[in-house]
Image 1 (cartoon, rainbow, N blue to C red):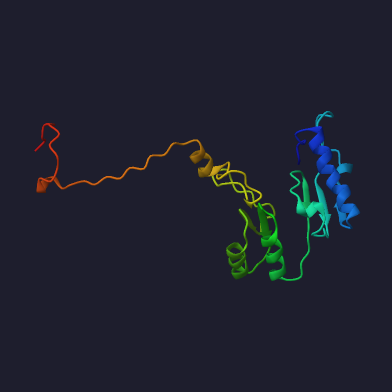
Image 2: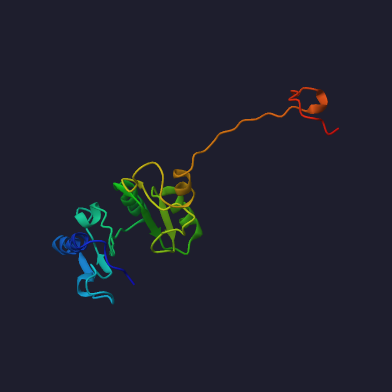
Length: 180
């Protein structure tokens, strides 16, 4: 289920990417423009969209869409896929599907993105983990959720202390009565 997009202009912008994909030779497998989700008729609706065989020269690949559109770019080898991900301008999230634990560990180490899914299609973590990407997919120096989100609204103190052993009389007499 997908909710409406935030404005009519944004819905139309996201829908325009579907036209761009068709013009660039990609295959629109599921067209969200033809899906009418249940909801208020005044909502800015666009159904889930799946676009396959997207060329890396297409705006559908080179721009972040921020809508219910999944673009598939096909590669032949692991190395080709890794190079494709790491050379991109954005580093929001990516996923790998495999039964090979070694391949999964290698992927999570080698890929340069902020969120990684292993056998999970959309690598959006639960709220107590940071959400966001790397490269041009991140604005500012902190992410919005998890401990980073808390840190953004927190003034931290760094305290360094050293405690002298009172048995060596190395302490300072502050004038408080002694318990001993």
